[in-house]
Image 1 (cartoon, one colour):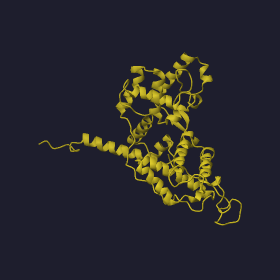
Image 2 (tube, helix red, strand yellow):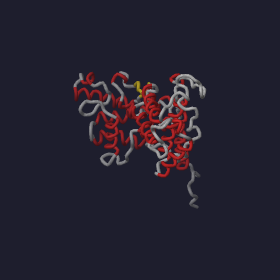
Image 3 (cartoon, helix red, strand yellow):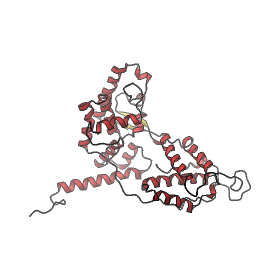
Image 4 (cartoon, one colour):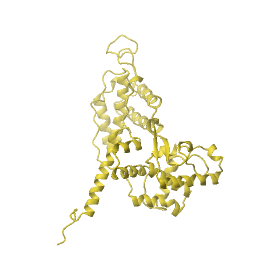
Length: 335
């Protein structure tokens, strides 16, 4: 969960402390609970964040209001930097992962920034709170051999629906789409030659993604098979590109289930998540020389720093290949 940026035009200018106007700092009292509730509405209605993202913020902000020393129905100005530090200490005592603590910090930082913008507080108590250090973990990605094996599984095993599952895997690898983007894809979003599609990503931002030959062929075969199963009129009745075996929209959970079957004990016995396709796509692009800005556009990342982590992966991979291939690449002298 990334820390959200507060939209300046959505909030009134902050009045000086003590100003005798309606809505000034000294005239209004806002409880922590009221501020959290209003902020969650702002995330959904103004920033148009996804339901999952808003739910994640809600969980962390609910957790804040349940912390010792934090009173949800007290004035929000009663929350201090010290009380926020104590909250982080509580999470550390519970052995929470650094990533979970940082998500919690990001949630209350953004909420307090919102409250400062609207003049509900005169001092932002979260400004002095720093994120905790996290161990650097590179994203899990598949080798080309692993991708090929997984994409072939629907044909080899035919556990569920061969044509659909093959198209699903090829399309995810070829485009680098998020699983939510795949689930939300409509037939009308895909070009007639299956070479590209318009997907809606985080923050309701649209972008074009592209499909290679293997994905195009698999997607075309799937649509024809879908017509045979449910009839050509079914394409008008259910406009989602991927459907389940009842002809209804395939959900994110359904996609995860399909991948779990094929990458589990019945398939490759090498479990991967849907996001591994996205990581593998990005890693392959960077390793093969694609400009990081291009990869950023294709992935729909708002920040270049998110994309740059894949350059670290490709660097490590090159070092590994060098050590394997070069005569002096880390091999012990056996003389």
